[in-house]
Length: 116
Image (cartoon, rainbow, N blue to C red; front, top):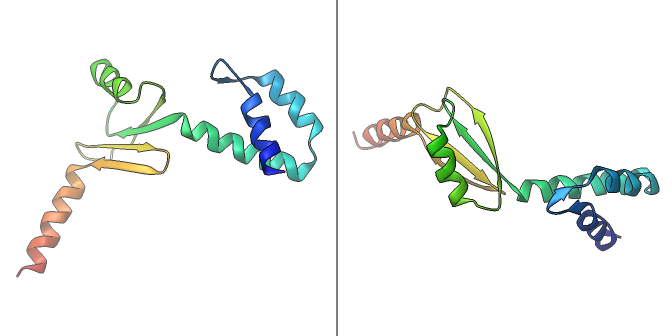
């Protein structure tokens, strides 16, 4: 059954984007349990196509171009989080990359405390 749903997920895309009409047709034909699995698989597929970029302030257009060049086939999703002091967090699939002044500061303090 899962292979069948995976094929339906693939069929839900046209030109690399979700096709709303196709999804509606598929959804109408699925029972509740299959529909839940189908939606879950769609979410996983969409997650593969996105990169979440979190910064303390909006990204400049130059930085956006640089990020898009690093992830050319992905959609950038930008998020603002002021608690990331002078840093950036990039999440692609389940891999997270983070450079953060606040985290570095706490690492230095922890190192000093452990070596006293």
